[in-house]
Image 1 (tube, one colour):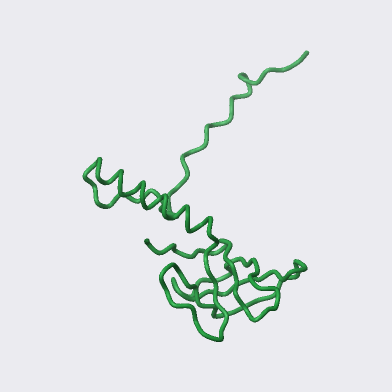
Image 2 (image 1 turned 30 degrees about the vertical axis):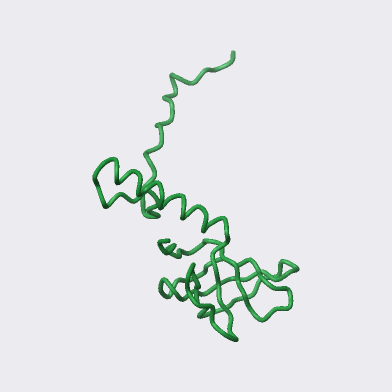
Length: 123
C-alpha cells in the first residue's frame, strides 16, 4: 500500500506511555513524512503536546519503548480504496500518473451569488 502523506490538521492515533492506551491526536506540525508534532487528547479530553513523534505506517516496524503515531483504520481503508481506484482509472486511460487522492487539488469554483434582481422579495 502507498504511504499516506501527513498534513496539519489530520487525526491520528497516538500510542504513548499512557495506561489509557491509544489516544486521539491532531497533527500540529509535520517535520517529515515520518516525524510529527501532535496535540494529543487524554481520556478526559484534556489536550497536551507530543513532539517528534514517529509516524508508523502499514508494514513498518513499531518503535520499541517509545511513543509513536498511526493512522486510524478508517484512513488506511480509504487510502487502499483510493489507490485501487487510481490503478483502475490509470488502466482505463493509459495514464500512469493518475492521482485521485491528491491533497493539493483545488476545489471547483463556487457558483456566483444570484444578482439582486434574481432574488425573490415578499411584499
